[in-house]
Amino acid sequence: IAGAEKLAKDNKFKFEQWIVEYVFKGHQTKRAGDGGFDGHIVYNLHNTGTPITLRAIIEVKSGNINIGQIRAFKDSITKNGADFGIFVGFKKIENKNNITDGMLKESNDLGFVENKDTDLISSGRIKKMYIIRIEDLLENKLPIELQQMATNITY
Image 1 (cartoon, helix red, strand yellow):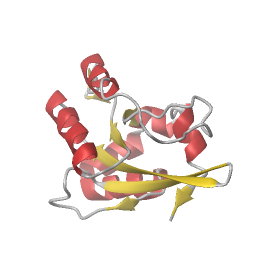
Image 2: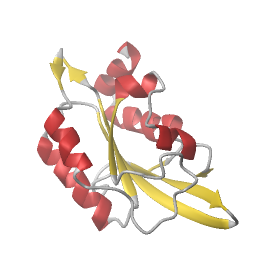
Image 3: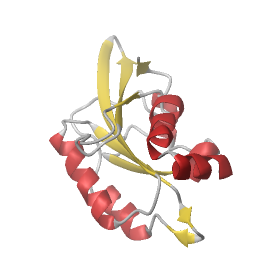
Image 4: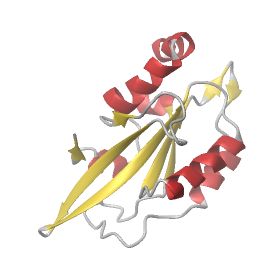
């Protein structure tokens, strides 16, 4: 975690690249004017011969997070035609909570991916927006559906 914090402080674009490309195996978008997200990833689910493609956008925040950023990312998911979004940030900044219960509620209120046969996922449900804490990410504590989909990524 200390290494992630140092990278975030020293070079936020390298930090974003590390999260998007190394951790999620996605593709980073341009650095400025990125349309409200830092990268994207395409998951291919194969279910009884009918492939299902899910496109997720990823937003990485290296500093303080506020509810407005969560709401803006919710809009980016829809505006950019993504099936769902992954918002990544530190749980705590300078020993203060950075991701609040209100932010988690805001993301949960978006609901689930609709009109896609996601029976391949054990929960059968994929949220429209995930907020992932970097601390959990480094300890491999991703939601089970993201863990299961991670084996089916388009490069």
